[in-house]
Image (cartoon, rainbow, N blue to C red; front, side, top):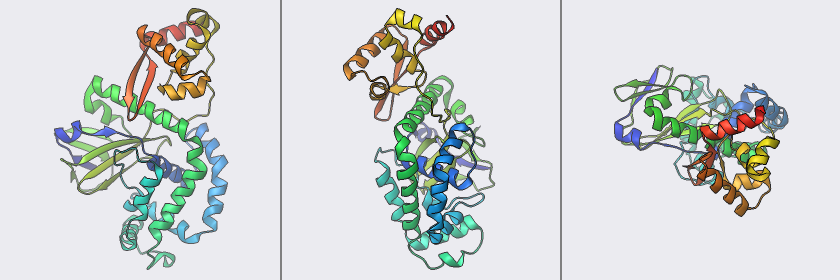
Length: 324
């Protein structure tokens, strides 16, 4: 098994962050496999897989680069730079791939392939640029159109994990992060089930990065300063419309306020609520204040966003109205 040695200060300073690049690379891996884990992924693949395959058919060098980089048990490091913890946006993140020297990329592909490079890739210094162009294509065509919703799902996962941390400590969070991860005790964190040498990462930055594709995850690093664990978020992405507020709940709270409470089955920001409800910012803010004062919702910061979500009392009110 692969595990990292982490001291208490490093673990205490670690953070959950959202990364557009990680989400895009997870999408690329899903396109590469063509296998869906649930209907939401199947619909996304049906919409974007044919165009992705046509794109690769027109560019055999890039296609060979990605096939080589996505090894059976190891992904070439230059394809997955770890998150920095800064909300820099996709273009800044993907620029780090473009900056990788060609010789370094070829050396990493030898590791992921566990064998010699295909003739098509030998001696080429443009492989990082080609990989970055393909990842940018996936972002532009297949991730960015859905990014607002995906980000909402990812931020909801961050809120849930943070709440679990406050209730059960790091062991409760790390044991359930993704298959193969668990807290071993004695400052040891198992990151996968592969037989790799342990790594001492005490003193480095450590980030935990959710992605929406299920069954996909990896570890990444820039030794010795930065490490990341990418894991599938707990909420599967599904294209469903917002639920309607029951008439009885609308009679109790008012239709607009009841609609806000019903939408908060997963954490949402004020901006997201404005977009979903069509109400003005001031109106949504007033509804949230009343719901907060009534202890039907709570709020928690996730990155730059403040997310609102139903309390247990809010869940009881909604479920009782739905059952009536």
